[in-house]
Image (cartoon, rainbow, N blue to C red; front, side, top):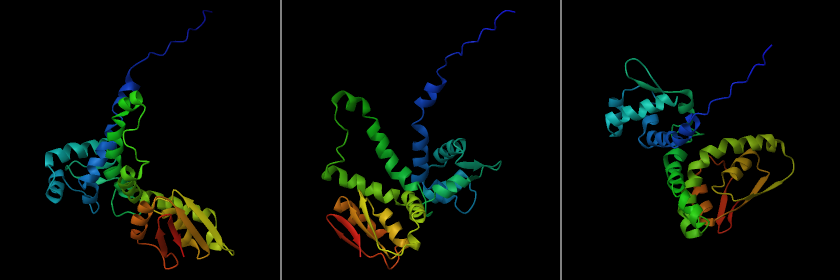
Length: 233
């Protein structure tokens, strides 16, 4: 019997084309967040014209954007032309949800992408686009960053506290939080037990500016801020 020959898989540019347009989804989501598309749909389906009246954005542009969000499975559209949230967008793209990613997509994603656009120059010159490790340049960026990732970090920090069984602790527990950012990880740990004491270390401007705005801290978490970070007392 003749031997079967294995057909060689044909090479196509499909994967390269997918990679070539990979920039689009995060920017589409960012435009949706910035133009209050998801927030406008929180209480039920609406047409692009209705959302335009609420937000002041162009109805035609909103329709194009929202059709793209349908393609990304972040919105649904019925036969009457009304758009509605999916479970995923309702959970993570509404500004008022505890674990929201809206701030990250609306504020941080455009900044990050704009810097990635300079990658060719960065590789050629061997220098970063922005020196965010310097206090002058970095303070504004990191202040925005830590504020917008608080909702993303808080659920994970709560899970860590549960895993460590802090609520059952009988002895005092000391925690050192390096690169504390907003202080949200330390706050989540102290919420589980008055026996937990956290010392945070980070840029004093970043930590001091953000942590006081975290509104769900219980009475046992009173924070003192200084140049070195925060220490619940």
